[in-house]
Amino acid sequence: MKYLRVKNRNDIVRDSQSGAILSVDRMAYEHRLRQIKLSEQKKQEEHQREVELNTLKEELHSLQQLVHEVLKKDSD
Image (tube, rainbow, N blue to C red; front, top):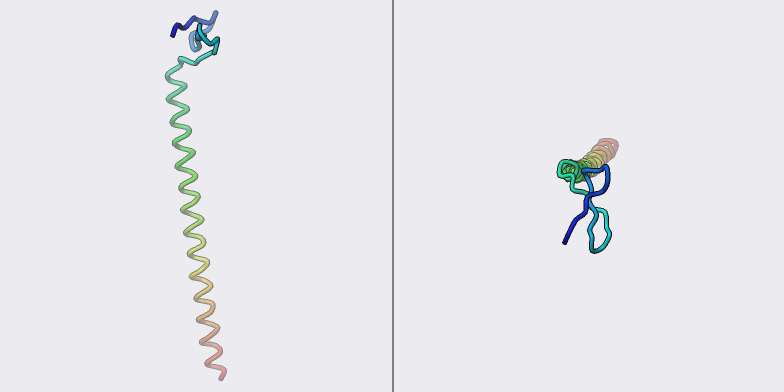
């Protein structure tokens, strides 16, 4: 493949065969990869928080049931 420089631009080239414009900015590419990785980590963290919250809700519900049972036994 042969790449042609785009006038007044150092960060992109044109593929002579397909005419496509391609970025050759390595730093921008690496920055984008870091952004994607951070986004995925945030999604995983959010999912983990949701799992923990649901677990806490289930435990709270169980405790409420136990308290209700204890109070019911005491009133009998």
